[in-house]
Length: 252
Ligand code: PXP
Image (cartoon, rainbow, N blue to C red; front, side):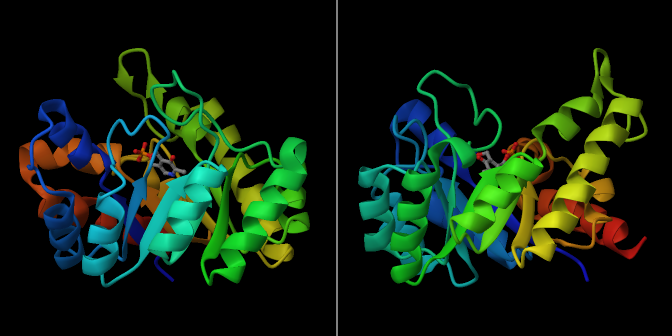
C-alpha cells in the first residue's frame, strides 16, 4: 500500500515570519496542500517560535480536515498547547536552542520517565503519540516501553548519504545503502512491537522512493524539499511530484 504523505508547512511560516506579515498564510498553504492530495498537515511549534506561532494551531485545527500532526518537544508548555489544540497526532522531537533543524532523534532511552509521562497525557487526551527516533534497536524498544503508538524514523542520515559533495549522488551509494538497511531493520522491529511506522527528515522526490519500498513505513512527513520546490513549480506540482515518487517506491 502507498504510504500517506503529511506535508510539513513550517517554511511557509518561515517566510511569513521574515516580515512578521500576514502572508503567506499557513492556513491557505494547508488548504492547497490538502487539495493537491496531501493526506495530512504537519507543523512544528518550536520553543523559539521561529516559524509556526501559537495562534496558528487553533487556526489550523479549525481548517485542516485531513490529519493534523504537531511536532513538539516534550515540555509542559507544549503539552498544554497540544491538549488545548487536539491535533490528531503529536510527534515528540528533541529540540536544541541553536540548531538549524531537528538534529537526529529523541533519546527516549535516556529520558524514559519524561517521555512516558508525556505519552500518557497525549493518549489520555485522545491524541496519537508518536516518537521521532533514530532507527536504533535501543530507542525502538524504549518507544515500546513508554507505550508510544507510533515511531517516526529519522531519515536524516540516509538523506545526507544520498547527497555528495557536488550535489546528488543517488540512492545507490554504499553509505546510503547501509542507512537504508538500518531503516528497513528498524521498521521491521518496530512493527513486531505493534508500533505504527512513519519516516521523515531530509527526504526529497529523488531519495524518498527507496524508503517507500519499506512496506512497514505507512506515513511520510516531508517539508523542506516540497516547500523549496514549490517556489519554482508551485505547491500543487511539488506535492504531486513527491507523491508519485512515493507511489513508484511502494509499488516496486
Ligand atoms: N519529521 C520531523 C520529526 C521533523 O522535525 C521534520 C523537520 O521539521 C521533518 C519530519 C521534515 O523534515 P524536512 O523538512 O527535512 O522534510
